[in-house]
Image (cartoon, rainbow, N blue to C red; front, side, top):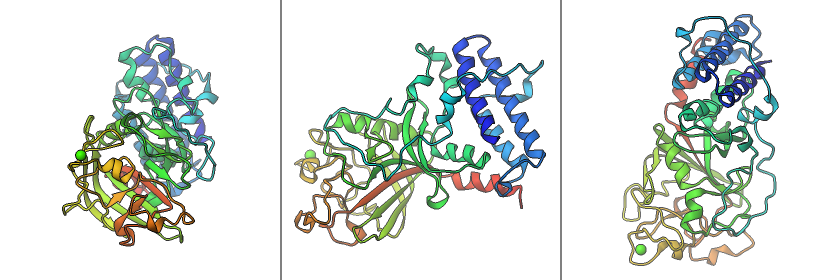
Length: 380
Ligand SMILES: [Ca+2]
């Protein structure tokens, strides 16, 4: 029953924009109607997951989201209009995971300019000729990142990791991402993930800018997307790494952002974790402040090309002690003689020749934990 409200709100958003009639009014009325129903239902003790907070706390969080998108329920006048719910099934992807998962096998391609945009079936939700001034309305139909999806899921008691569509500010089309909703409380937008070596990462700048791979498999989300996501708020970075013996370690940075093109400079700080500071915040081999280099796109501080040398795309300086987009080796590939040109994070085991099995880089707004705590506060 709780999901129904999200279905309604997304369906109404789509319908109201497409019709073009009284767009803002219908949009606002519909959202506020859902909010009122949220209060109504929650007050009726119809909440399946009371541990998420009081009705006021839960619906209040939804209200915060409405206000963020410019919807003011306090200025409404007149009767609420009937809601049209046509196309409900087609918009479920806004709040439900798309099919697919980590264990799924995927074929990689060598298409340098390939991106994953449009492969998850969400483009059908967009009008064919969306006027520029409806951008804000359309952003209301999507979430800025996986932390907002987590908030919406928590409201409806259905928290789950999986593939979702998000639409960060100033990104033209929705993008498909994998949301990790379990690690350290969830809310993580995965920007890079490797676990079986099925995807080629030695690509040119165009591929790294737009992204490549499949959000339900191995992928790189794209520098432009990462830039826009991390420009929305203050973000932290969580890197999870696993070796071929099943040891899992993490490196966490309390601040993380990627600058705009053409440099896509790395800004990172505040290390903590168990995998060590592979970005070397201090020292001559630091990645902090470095520009992004790829094959045939040398922006490093070395006279040669570190991207060619290490075989990946990364924030290389005059060298690097990390190379998570490097060539993938399996434990049967005798990677101990690879001279370090692999998927490595030097401080993981202080072995520059060790190629990791799994990598996952993900970002989350730094105020996420505070938001969740506030949401649950009403219970105490
Ligand atoms: Ca160079």
